[in-house]
Length: 80
Image (cartoon, rainbow, N blue to C red; front, side):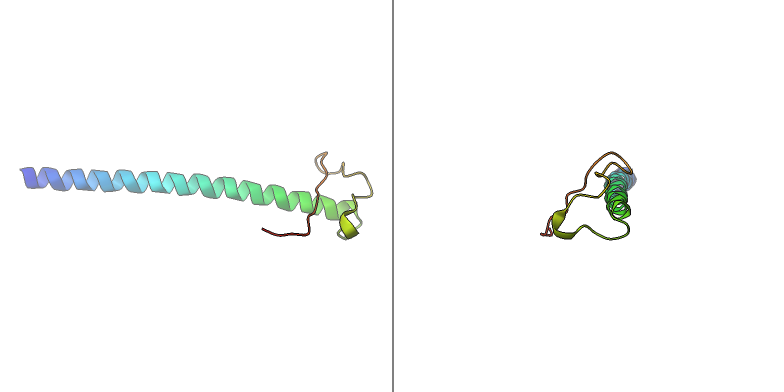
């Protein structure tokens, strides 16, 4: 009896842990995907505002950066 209860407890604990891990990884991936899409959209807006090219020497877009969302993307020369 105790052996079967112990196995059931271990199985429930493992399923709970797997469920929590799946939810955590799912939330992290979802928010990461949303961030990547926002960054891609802002870069596409920057390219669109400069007639298909990136601005040279960090110059702002020719239309003032108001296309696509009302923000200006600053491009730094360093990467993470």
